[in-house]
Length: 299
Image (tube, rainbow, N blue to C red):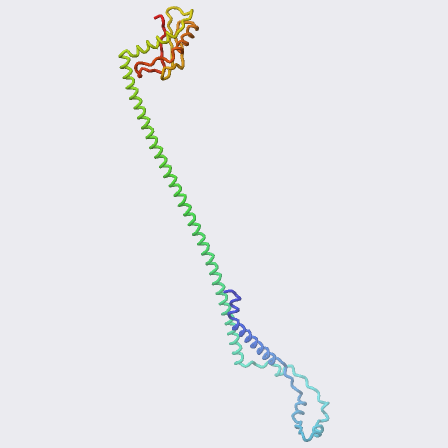
């Protein structure tokens, strides 16, 4: 509890305590003053005079002046003895002392109780504030642990999701690769089957004499398109490589082994281009994109 609240709550008891202390201290001061104040004792002559002096009456005023002794001026004051009994302080009654002591003890006890209460309240307030600080620190630490745990969970979940996606992508790639490999194998097998079938068909056509007839027809077509130059000698024989596309159109001509000069070789090349498009084979299986012919017009 704050000090201002304690004072407001105990204002009346504190004010009464202060008044009681003031009264007790005042009574003690008066008693002490009366106990130590010197008591003036009149001289013995004056005391005797006062004892013999008759009490004046109201009906006889002149008689008062007549009884005044004439030797009064000769009376000298006696010196005050140094150890006069009247100088000693008068003892304080025991009852008053006990009451004052009891009041002072009660006030002191009340003040101590109030101070102890205030100290306990302040200690309790400090302990409560420290407990609140500890509670807030514990709450912050718990919140930090919760955030770290949540971050760890999110990271683990993200890592697990990344691994799952990687596995899924790897599985998909593997499946696609297997499918592609299977398709390529199937295509190669189909091509091989077609090639085998074409080869068998070609072999059948060759065995039937169709290939020889086709080659002879090509040679005759080129020879008809050839213009024999003057330098061409008898026994001419040249190997000619011809490249054609489907339909027989010639795209390239090269002269290989040949026993003629350059002019004759050039005339053979021109003859092949003039013979384009070349005749189609009697069987489609006999078609070749690259042909190797022997040009021997005198054979």
